[in-house]
Length: 479
Ligand code: NAD
Image (cartoon, rainbow, N blue to C red; front, side, top):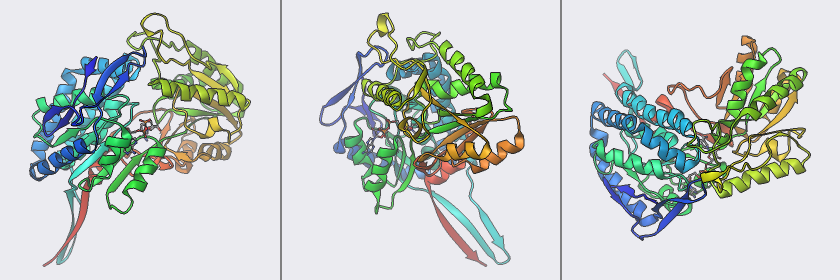
């Protein structure tokens, strides 16, 4: 059993109340790690440490901050394999996904914002006799709260820009997948981050998380998680004047037009639907297919999906691993049952997968395709966040856009067409923060990241993130 600790003021420590939470390994269902069940007292200590560290860290040169971030990137690079194993066992995702997506990206987050720290600039507008410029100053101690699906990737996506901008951080990783955040805390000590610059407090959302967002010395909350919890954070912080960035759920459309090469598109469409067991906020879980190619593409989709291998996440041949928890397994199973009851036809998958050996008690579900459902039924409207995708036909461009926009969410979409004009036209009209044309999940970290409608407010990525963690002040000199 791994015993995890908080990082507060440069020291690893248990929760002051001595209590611990347990997390199981999703692939086996067996207890795997114990983490501090932190509460308001630990959050107070972490925020106090972040407040003490802020004056020196915010005054440090961009070069000095950049060097710290670079050292963290290098240490992640050194421990790549160890971190990938930890993430795979903690979250149930295939080891190769942890290696090539999560850890690769965590390292890149630090190296990208190590560069950004030295390149960050603000605007100046001069007219004869007058100089106007924008001073961007770090906010102070900020909260970074992340979910369980891409644990180290999303936590570092927040921590890195906050530190680069000169803020100090209290991070609250998901209690469901805490292991790599604990390892990051150890690396932060090794990298020589000054005490209090980065604090990591483990624990439940309702206790540690709630205490953190409502702490009066926290100047901003950068949150990624469910729309329900995000709405609660917006309500809890109303009137406190904290800055908020909320990255929430999605019900993303994949749109396939009839001029697309179906054999090319099918591999990426299946990857978009089922990567990380469908537990990526950006997964294309509603597959909209132009009616005249519906049957042809459906057949390809079923064929490719049936080839996916569900198995032990540590086995290199597994395409899909386990769902993250028993509760999430039950939720996704209930969504499939509901779709069936609503008249959906299960084209493939549709239930649990039994794996023999070490994973006999794990939470595995077969990649599932469903069609025959109305656009307004639960499976087409609510986020399932599992290996389940629905298929819907559309007639023309306008119909595709109406269907894609017809949910409360607006995070991402991917569009497949060889017609470049149409691709741009559709991208413009989609209510989504991120649109991929003839690709999925290709990211340039300089571009903004975030959703519209119930998928959130605020933008992460590149300068947007650096700006979020600073206060803009307008200064005018008349001479
Ligand atoms: P969640 O909302 O249950 O938890 C997210 C984090 O918030 C966890 O660390 C949790 O402990 C904490 N939390 C819970 N209650 C809190 C409270 N009252 N105050 C403060 N913190 C609290 O989400 P989850 O189940 O971990 O993650 C899955 C969800 O995250 C999905 O809806 C998915 O779409 C979304 N997500 C969004 C993005 C994005 O970029 N938009 C990325 C990944 C995941």
